[in-house]
Amino acid sequence: MISYLKRYKYQNMLQSHANYEFVPEISTYNLGASIGIVANSEDRKAVDAFCRAHIGKTTAITSIFYSEEVCEEASTYCKKDVTWYGVPIHNEVSAFLEKEYDRLFFISTEMATHQRYICQLAKSRFTIGPFLGGEEVIFDLSIQVKHMSIEALIKEMANSINLLSNIS
Image (cartoon, rainbow, N blue to C red):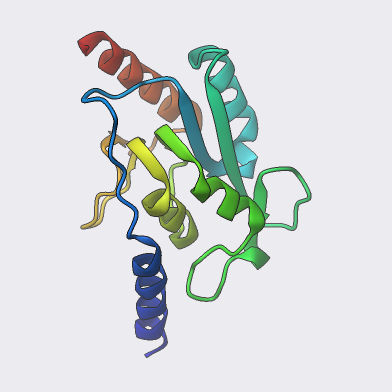
């Protein structure tokens, strides 16, 4: 019964925000104007290295990190900011969801309900993340992550971006 209520409340919150439709001004994706990154706080160094190595200096990067412990770092929310039904309630999350992104990266080998919520509601033209199994696919480009480290996932994402950039 509790799991049913939890799922109902989560879906209800998701549907209340899902009325946004992103209509691109052009027919192709802009692969570098603004980027959103969703990750865990323990992967912050790897994410920073990825940004320095693969993303141009003129690109606007906005990131949000999740931490198990209470953390006062910028752009970080913690376990106490997540409701019992899996929706994050925090000013940083609200600010992240208000911005529009050309690309959204989810950089982790596991996805919690609150991270799925952010990825589903983010206003992005193209989403990239790991294929985590399950019946629902929320990313436009999914990367297979069986027994893959964060560094290997980031390297595979960079290769995929290069392939997409060379197609057009």
